[in-house]
Amino acid sequence: MTLVVVSSLWVQIRAAPAFREKAVIPSFLRVDPHIAHFETFLRKDLDGLHSLLLVLGSRRPASPWLRWGPGDTIGLFLTKTSDPDRVWEITIASSGRDFTLEVECADSSSVVWSRTIGDYGTPSDSIKTYFDLSSKQLLRRIEFAPLGVRQILSVDEDLYFLLYPSALPFLHRTETLFARIIGDEPVVVTRSETKDLLTLFSRASIPDVERYQGGLEALPQSSPKEFARARPDWARRTTRPAMVELNEEIGPSQILGDRLWFGKTFYDGEGHSGVGGFGYFDPQKKHFIEFSPPEIWRWSASALLVEQDVVWIGRFRRPEGEERSGGLLQYNLVSGKVSEFRVGSVIRQIKRWEGKLYIASDGGLYVMDEHGRIDRYVFEPSLDGETAAFRCDQ
Image 1 (cartoon, helix red, strand yellow):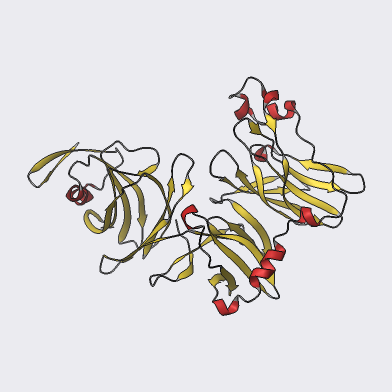
Image 2 (cartoon, one colour):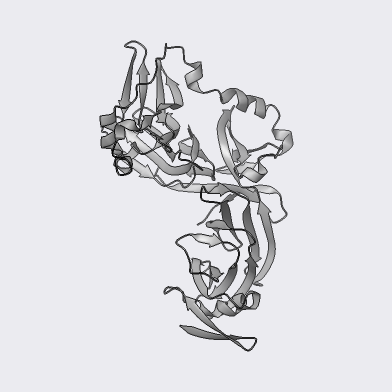
């Protein structure tokens, strides 16, 4: 317990046990002398000399999530790594609405956090704060519509990406943006370079299941017994698994030879559910072959890429409310080995290009190299306000 004097007023401070940045407390109390609870949600070393701090001050005890609402104040600070009492305030702000925050990216010149609204986690606008490490000054604070990558398309010898706003308040945006790979990194292209791209992307967006000419039959549903075995999470919520309405459908699809490969998708809420899996339709036998390792039982498939001996699956949840990412799954068709990779946003498309795996997602572009290392790129305002691509460090 620490006592701090502000304007001759004694204020009792109750900080979380792990909170050690006591030097930032006066900044909060200048904004609201009734703030009594503090918690650090980001502590990041920048250059060995300075650390970046994102601290929440609140009148109420901290929750497991970074909630920023009425009565809460969020502060961004720089501190001297060797002397935590040496603190520089970059910006501090209160909120008039209840948001849940998540730190998306942070480096030596900026920090970005996303905002969601309500119990369903509906995306809102994000905030990017630029600062100067040398002068310890705020340069600019920008609220912007977060952009995801909807599609990937190779045109001649170039790889292009269709960008789209993923926050509901900004879905009215009419401008269409594209990016492409230049060297090894994505770059937002100018309007003069986008001629005919929208038409090409529109044609490429037709699902392979609609193009397929192999006499596709209806997808078989999992049995109540299979559902009860694969979904113990649902079994805990209902004593009658047979009463759950299964709604498994063909989701992402890929034509390979005369077969249609697919990933299953299903609504997972309000008495509806399913068992995740993937496989192919054999047109000769008029039969579905399915694979359903335990790692995909609870998930729908949002994206699919079938290579020679490997299937890549984007996993996601379709509950009542916003969709949620389950990351990337790799299944070896020869050995049956399953590997999982963290991708924090819902995956929309997976494409192999020049030896790398490009993953389009609601949170930007993920790129996996031949060693399994994943880099994330986001499309955000630059300091001058123009949309640009940035490597995202967390």
